[in-house]
Structure formats: structure tokens, C-alpha cells
Amino acid sequence: MAQTVLTIDLAALRHNWRSLSANSDTETGAVVKADAYGLGAGRVANMLAIEGVRRFFVALAEEGAALRKALGSGPEINVFSGHMAGDAPLLKAAQLTPMINSVDQMLRHVEALPGHSFGIQLDTGMNRLGMEPSEWSALREIALAQHPTLVMSHLACADEPTHEMNARQLHVFQQMTDGIDAPRSLAATGGILLGPDYHFDVTRPGIGMYGGQPFDDARPVVQLSIPVIQTRDVAIGESVGYGNSWVAQGVTRVATIAAGYADGILRAMGPRAHVYVGDTRCKIIGRISMDLIAVDVSALKTAPDTVDLLGRHQDIDTLAEAAGTIGYEILTSLGARYERRYTGA
Image (cartoon, rainbow, N blue to C red; front, side, top):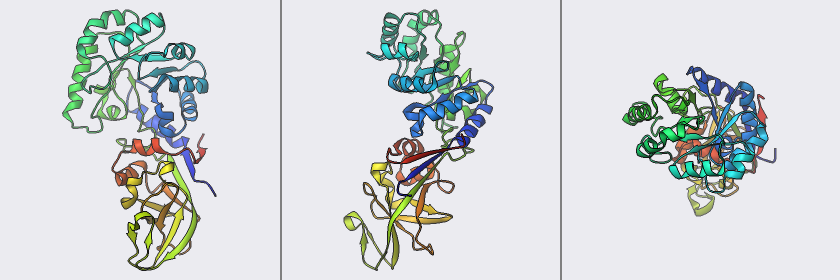
């Protein structure tokens, strides 16, 4: 194998979606923004459409247009950024549903695309996107009279179940939406796990489908296998990599593997990260460089052909901890140079 291989287990992803869907009695959609968190929105969404998903969520109109080409007509594709200036042709041609975030977006939408579907995004305390209570109060009756397909908000702290912000946002969302006829949505993965009070009419799993926290029961979806280019013995006192940041304290067998930060392997994880060869954990040593990483393989009897950075022994959140980040960033950083293989279709 000359190229790093990213294997995406669609059966595991499907299992995770089913498990999250089983947590609620409401409709379960799917978040496939950022190219399905880097795993291929077309492949992922088509598989989920076969599962029965009828609502997909993306960040931008351009993402929605690409997804519509992959999915064809039928499923609803919701755009979190709403109706931005210049979006009208894409929204119309691809039959996308913008989640309107402000009075200005509402005016833009009804003027450019009268009669075109839309949803509403409300701000319940995250202060990121959506109409604040005063805006919504002024626009509510006008907007509801045009039959939005969804009214939604987003939780800021759902990955911390005991955080007081969850109950506060739930209360605000109820105040802003009780009595409306449109479907309501508050819960992504973390919100689903908070329980039925947060589920409303539509849930929107994202990171949990892809094998990440806070969904503890998620099956790993990705495996990243990196080829070994060369192995060598490094003597006591010799250094490895840029800046002489690692110096051998004993004779060390070092493998140089064919990936680096140009492939989305975050440079910051170097001092704390490991790879696996079978069941054996091997330490990354020295600095992660653009295309190469050094690994201590002294514990192995023979030089390996490949190592696994992600797989059954190490998931995206374990790797994220080593990098001081979150599993979302690990997934969405996965590089374009990988050969991508899909299993479980």
C-alpha cells in the first residue's frame, strides 16, 4: 500500500443513526454539513435516505446544491446559514430550504423567492445564529402565516448533561414556540441524549452518527491506515525530526510513516499521540511534519507495513484529546490525499 487509506464503515454509521433515532419517537433527520464531517456527503446521505431520512441539514447553500445533485429530488435539504445575499438562484434551482435567521433574511427571502419553502432558526441563548425573542415576537405571526417547514434552535451545552444552560434554553424555546403548528427541532446528538423533553418533532443527529462523543455507545466509523516508508535504528543520543525535539534515550527502532499535517493530522498532537500496529500501541516521536511522522516501533518483532492512527483501538475523541481539541475537528480535518474506501454499504 503506497497511499494512506481512510476506510469509512457505512454499516457502523447506519447503526449509530438507528440507535440515536431509537432514542426518540419523533422524526430523525441527519446533519451532513462539511461533506458529512469529511466522510463524503453524497455517499452518507444516499445511505441514510435508504434508511428513511427525509430531512438533511447543511451549513451553506453551496453544500446543499451539491447534496441535491447526489440525492436527487425528494428529501428536504435545510441550510443553517439561511438566505444569504446571492443565494436565491441556488435555493431555487436545488429546491433548498433556508433556515431564516433574521428579519433581513426573511425580507430577502419573500422578495426574491415568494412561495419558496423556508424554516426559522431562533436564538434561545447561544448568541450565534437565529432570531432573538424580540425579533421573533415582531415577525412571528407573519412568518407562521407563510407555513415554515421547521422552527428550530440549537443547544450550547448539550454535551454537558447537567449544565444549567440546557434547561434554560429548553424553557426559552418552549416560550417562543408553544402553540405553533410548524414542526419544531431543538436536539442534535447531545440534545437527543438529554431525553424526550428536548426532542420535539424533529431531531438532528450529527457527530454521534459519525462515531463521536457525547454518544458513548457509538460504533467507530473511520479507520486510518498509514503506510510505513522506511524503518531505521536510532542510537542513544541521536535525534529524530525537526528541531531535535526528541532524542533517543536508548537504541530505538523508528518507522517513518507517509502522512502529516498536510493530511489533517494535527501537529499539536505529536507529543501525546500514538498509533497502533495490531494490538500494540506505538508512540509518535518528534514533530509531526507536513508529509511524514516518526513512530517508535521498538516493541514490534518485525517492521510493520502500515500503522493505524484511527481504528478499533483509537477513536476520534481519543485522538482529539491528544491534540487538545474535539472529535469534530479530527474528522473534518481528514485530508484529501487519502484513498477513501467505503464498507458496509
